[in-house]
Length: 357
Image (cartoon, rainbow, N blue to C red; front, side):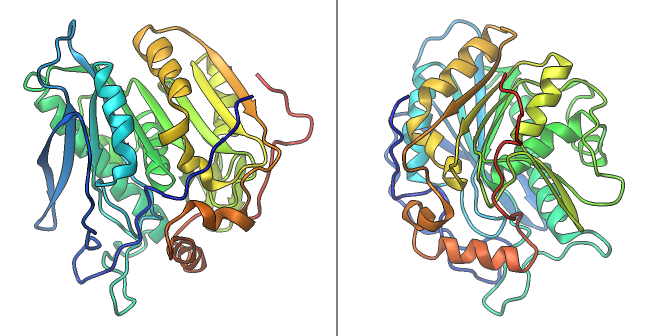
């Protein structure tokens, strides 16, 4: 096993709040080899939502280009599409012929300086679920924009992959689940009736549902292939299954077993004993694993099912998680947990006696 290296920066940016529906973005110096342009892909409540599109415009490719859409993390309360940590990965994928898209989305759990929510859900709408669902709506809107402009960017509409870290990973997994269950959010998305993603790459993500009738994952049609990165002892986002009075979480270990039963390709990279640091590590250290999924399953269409377990003598745990985040981020996430706006619970590992596939 290769040695895991940990880094002290994170894509989750602690941001100051203002009276708008989005936190104020900190200026960052982005160093990117790829060509980038920023576009407005949707307007919500009179405010534009932006995405950055990365590609090598002069690069010669055979056929149309696959697309990698990334959603940042931050407990639906903070963060931005602009994060220098991600750009080396974007450059890497663009060099392989991909178009990379970093999107903003509405932050349903963000609060102003007065402590009041910046976005108020409709009456009777679970605030936690609302934060996820509006993030999903914005993923769909970004996807619809790219489909509309597919010829302009030489995009392959059948090779669009969505990814994200933490909250962004949860948004991405819920986006795929909604498409496969005819959820109202998917029905109102404006996407083509038979559209589906070519893959989902959640970095510390899970499907989260609320309500008495959402106690199990029931897919109406086969989902697309998935590539999971997760710590088996993640205290923030469940690795297996989480049941709380107000929500139910289904992590990669649980979902992978369903994919196996449906004969859907997947790769599950489990960091045994690790925690939420796997929301960050793949961006810098797991390119080979990501390439394997994108090349072999998404592009070549191989029906592979992989569960890889990586161990370390000193796995990242909640006690030293502060080493992986920027100042104030850990405290901010804990505040969100206390307010019911972010998932979390006691760390849990692989169930005893559970098979590896």
